[in-house]
Length: 284
Image 1 (tube, one colour):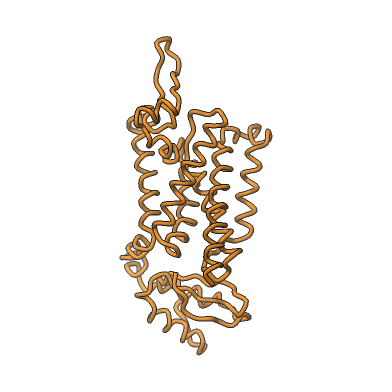
Image 2: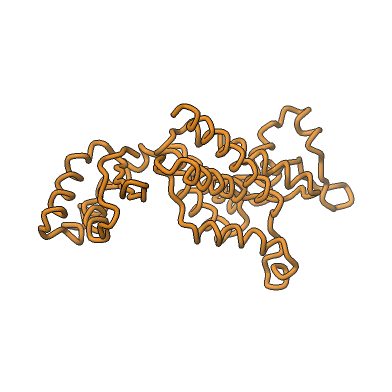
């Protein structure tokens, strides 16, 4: 995201926001101590944004809908993918693994679970150990469970938060920072869940909670950084994490949740958020 201009603190920007989205101009408006800061996602749209803002400031009519269907849908995805290629690739990999599970079934789970899985001679489930897997060179198992999803709802919700938070991190701080969060939170969450005695689990939710913690802490400690997360969303996600740890969750059908992975990911995200926000504050 790129800073463009400071708007008055008491300005009603709702009409401006609608007009910018109607013109397919990716942006964000954050509240700063001195006013409302307007951010731009794609610098190539700088002049188009200024034209819309100028019309808004002069009180001229603003567009409230895309001019045509082709304007709305044609070519809009490319700028987003350029801003967040790693987030898009991670999401695509999760979808590909989910499709492979539908075709190949348990073979994919056995390959990507944190420990080797198989069928014992007695017909039961044979579960290996992480030490054995690492000794055999299967280091991918430290991260790969994050790409496993066991149902459409599991997949959809995890991809929703991955896309929401991941795009923000990558567009503001680059793909390297996003890669660090995915790898560190994925491994940290997986190890936390495995340490709790679970061998078969999966999902990107540990990474999602890490991204939540990271974005929230950056927005609080660096108000001018462009990071933003609605406070009610933070309350909802943390409340959900606590709820799934209770017996009540099991009673209503949400008992099989990787709680330790959620908590482990959140701790990783908060730790990285604290470190990088502290480093940025020292540079000021």
